[in-house]
Image (cartoon, rainbow, N blue to C red; front, side, top):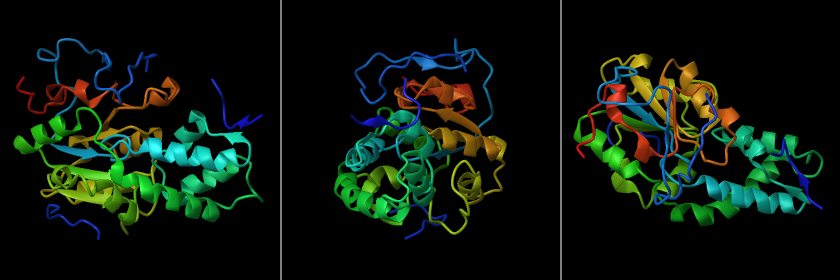
Length: 277
């Protein structure tokens, strides 16, 4: 019998463009499913005062723009099965958004694998399995609509992802058009990113690479991971969380707004140009 682990129940890029209450979530990975916008005081967005005056947007990548998180889960489940253990979402929540070395340490420690598997061995094994999966990743619902809308309205966008260069290239090779609309991308192995999320390093680095001396209060971050939400708040930025519906609602705290899908995002609520329906 397997033992459950844990508690049961986005070449470096420069500034030049690239070539909470309990919430009932629908499954945001299914665009056909009914959707619920879960946000404090959501109502008539057209008449409501904007939550903030946002001028710049920063996107996380994995699990927010691209549907890659399932690959990590699949691979980690396979690795744990050899030790008669089960990978669950309380463990995944602790690993999401972290740099690879840190998430590997968490995996080994939380699963009680010390002496059986080192973090380095885990990463080596996981790497070979992930490389075959990443090129097949797809965009999540609402991503293209929002990115094209912001670009068409002159809103500068960046990506801040914990992924390193090699993984970024694999994940984005079939999505070059979308990433070409970003002002820049900051990756987890960028020299300016001294510490991974929940440290604010990656979001502050992304902010500094915009032109014109942008203030944190003018930046809106989109995240799916609890550590990413914390990093954005630590940077002094507003953050919209679009979590996987399997993530316990206790991890939603800290986000300024929680949505079940980017299809539910209303730009005018954040002082951004409204969609033309």
